[in-house]
Image (cartoon, rainbow, N blue to C red; front, side, top):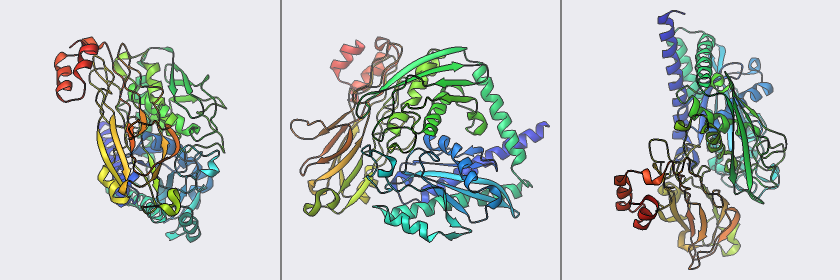
Length: 551
């Protein structure tokens, strides 16, 4: 390939990324659920006719996009490419064929150019309600967790599948939002397909085949080179989760070969009877992301750049959950995996990893009205979820980020957006002082959130929180971040369980203290001017400054 051809392919590649980013932005602009339009809990991408991901949108979460990278192959098995027609849209929320739980809808749409199918667009979005018990850990099988949608057509050559939509509406507490989100997912794929056709016309391309070969060859070559630059060996680490019935331990042995990295999860805790279990695709998604953040962060994410990372997940462990185990809040465990991967890589490339952070989102599903209080209800029925995060772990040269979602990458939802769609009031939302783990670089601060219903009415929270019994650890002499807490705002500070459906009594508020990130390096080596600034900003107390930092 000549130099000018390589330049042209790179321009086309960048254009393809712009196409899928517009695809994602259309979804955000048209979505009904606040989880999509406010938090950005979604993914979008374009695939070749073999179901291999060519490019992903910048906007999106690794749990979605890296799981979705496997999903399109399942759609092609059900609806082969030669049977697809313009206007077809297929959908599923199968946790083992999609992205790990029923609250994520995945839609796949064929793209055509000059009457010929040239690729596929896919997206995933987290919706507010899919029926059943609602998002939470209480289910004892996936069938209790909500409406289970196999791979079916929601649109057939542009015509809506009315039977599908009848089932969809009747199975949800939020039917308008749910139906609207499905239309949004289909519309954003249509937008991607339109832009792709324009791109192919502009560059006089009849297919994506040549561009796909270039993308995959460049990505695979660069990823293997990055792996080859690492020290060889097997590196082991473990991390603990609060679990549900009992604590959970994740074990990993990461072996770095010349051109691939293999992670063996032998020794990891077994399956749970509750919905914290992790389908294997979700485990692979966050494993790859955690490794890629350290090893090959600048290489675009696609089928080829993910292929050198291989996971061995023993049957019967919590990271390889079979049907029909409950999986509703698989992120509680799954979002710890990047910290686990960095625990391994800290032994190989210590200057490129972070300390542990709050990791799993603190996204309380809230419910109220007659479904909680019966005839005594003082507010209308509502079902809402709000996305929030604690602090990230310290970085080698910079402090951790405050109230920022890592590894999920979703945005913190503005309180006004939630208050606008549900009878909920946020009485407090601020950074949590003294929650950041001390170190030469400190962790990010967690948050304090105080939530009540309007009129201080009774409501319920389906708690799905972690890092309460197991605080984020520091690295290389850095201290732990503060553990999370779940409380009532009464005089005794009554502790609530970090997981499970619980009622907040009339007159009381829910008080959440989100975890802080772990620190990195000796706290005594921290720049005194930075310590003083944190004291002046009210983020650490003078007592902490003296006792921990010696300032």
